[in-house]
Every structure is written in structure tokens, then in C-alpha cells.
Length: 225
Ligand code: ADP
Ligand code: ADP
Image (cartoon, rainbow, N blue to C red):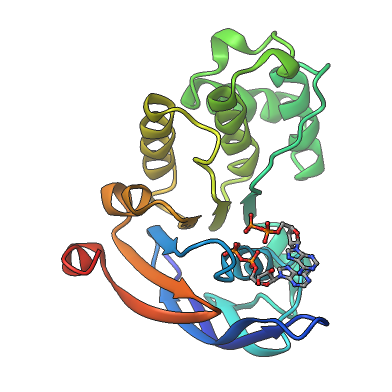
């Protein structure tokens, strides 16, 4: 199992905002929490890890893969659940997951059926698979997002502020699901909610104004939270 290495990563936007200032982190497989207030730089770091934007400087490696310079290779083993996971409301979960599976390169029909059934069962959506996504609750939509993000067994799973729209019960179910399904991948969960991190992440970093204030095992950091 490979770790994610982030070395001296910086990003300044055109408006002069230093969103990331010399960030270095070593992120092992399992659930890792990136905790910080609004504007801290979480989404900038998450989008950078997801190869959606490039840092001004610094290096990022997933095992031997160069995340900044080998985007195509990284994308083949990347799952990304953005803050607002938009879905086509008239499609059913079954149809859309099948479609995303094709995009992920799972072209063989029987293989696709096997993969999508397993994911719909794991995310507790199997019974709802023939319903249109427009009728899904927030929690169901997020679980569907997890199913999409897990297609192809990604080594790296990026989950940006996933619990924002969820009620407390949905929140707990969602986090448990993520920690269960993500135990073999590097899973990075960004959030401004301390409990999201303290309950399920083994390691955490606290980010503020583009800088890492603390990097620790969650157990050791509990006092500081
Ligand atoms: P978050 O919810 O993570 O705090 P924001 O509300 O800061 O995110 O930003 C929402 C979106 O607007 C993001 O896609 C971000 O890139 C963009 N954005 C944020 N601040 C600015 C800005 N000053 N100029 C241009 N785009 C921005
Ligand atoms: P977070 O996800 O922790 O809320 P962001 O990464 O969205 O933080 O934003 C970090 C800082 O960068 C904020 O000050 C935000 O306004 C700014 N920012 C984000 N996206 C952009 C953008 N596209 N252009 C300019 N400034 C941005």
C-alpha cells in the first residue's frame, strides 16, 4: 500500500491570495482528515491532489506516480468526490453508475454489471437503483457519489467537505461507509467539522491560511482539538 507524499507545495491565485504556502505532508493509506475553516486552502489542495489544478511549485507523489506530471496515469487510479456532486436528475443510479463505469474504462458489460452491483450494494442503494437521482435525499446522493468515486478501486480517494448537506444520522452512516470502503486506499477527507475527523480518521492535519498548523495521529491530537 502506497502513501501520498506532498512536498513544499505552494499556490498563489492571480488575485494575490496565497492559498497554499509550502505545504508538506505524508499521508498513509486509510482515512486522513484535512481540517480547517472556510478559506483555509482545503479545496485548493484537494483539487491539486485530484489533478484539476497545478501547484506553482512543489511535488506530489502517490507511490512512484508523479501526480503533477503524470495526470493521465493518476486519473486512472483516482476517485474524487467534489463538494457539490452534480448528477443528472432524470437518470437512475443504475444507469448513471454504469455510464461512469464506461468512462473509467470498464468496457466489458458483464464486468461492469458485477462492479456496479457490488458498489450499489455496499453503498446501500441497491434497492433504490431504479429510482431517478432527482428524487434522492442528500445522504443518498452522497452515497451515490461514493459509489462513483470508488469505481475502478482507486488508490487515492479525495473527498471534499462531504458531510455539509447531511443530517446527523446520515453523516455518521456516510463516514462509516467511507472508512469501511476506503481502508485500502489513501482517503483524504477535507472538512471544517472536528467530529468528522476525530471519529474516523487515524491521522489529521490542521490547515489555516494556506499553512499546516499541526500534523499528527488523531489520538495524539485529541487534546489539541
Ligand atoms: P469553500 O466552500 O471551499 O470555502 P469558496 O466559497 O471559497 O469555497 O469558493 C467556492 C468556489 O469559488 C471555488 O470553486 C473557488 O475556487 C472559487 N473562489 C473562491 N474564492 C474566489 C476568488 N476570490 N476569486 C475567484 N474564485 C474564487
Ligand atoms: P477552503 O476550501 O478551505 O474554504 P479554498 O481553497 O477554497 O479554501 O480557498 C483558499 C483561499 O483561496 C481563499 O481565500 C479563497 O477565497 C481563495 N481562492 C480559492 N479559489 C480561488 C480562485 N479560483 N481564485 C482566487 N482565489 C481563490
